Length: 188
Image 1 (tube, rainbow, N blue to C red):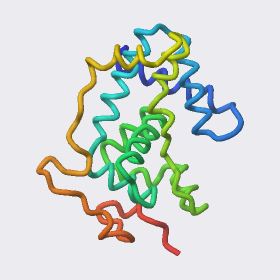
Image 2: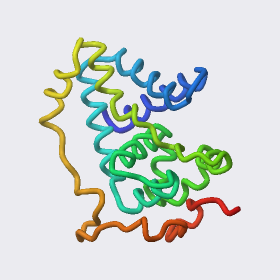
Image 3: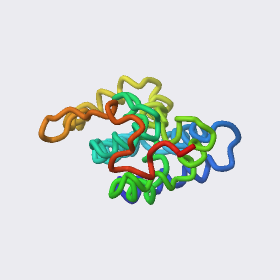
Image 4: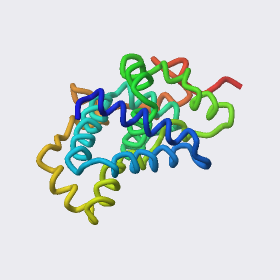
């Protein structure tokens, strides 16, 4: 699977989920699992490799800061969910945010969450595990998926630090959007 095929799977799942009722994040994750389960085991593994590459590519301080501001805080687990949720938004939003995370302030879900006073915009944990669930559906267990996938996994740098090892310090600047003025909390 190449990157264009990956994004086609994401966009097709988004289209499928658009007509579903209930929670849009769950509808997308379910549609994605359905799409992947309708393919071959090897395709699912290749999908996961592409997902991991894209997920790792936005494993950056500026993205974590955006997630922190959008979510009213962002632990390391929440940052995983934020990155998965951003991938679930499709190629256009992913590429725009990867270039300039502050553009997420224009995302309709972020705007709606700010108006409603919620902090769950763009965070989608279940997308992290879609390939595993699809593989399990085909194979009967997800242990085989993990064994088949393990040789290709790589661990990027620790997300709480920059490349120079300095710790991120978001808590000291709560209420200050810093380099992301549009992504910060809405004004009263």
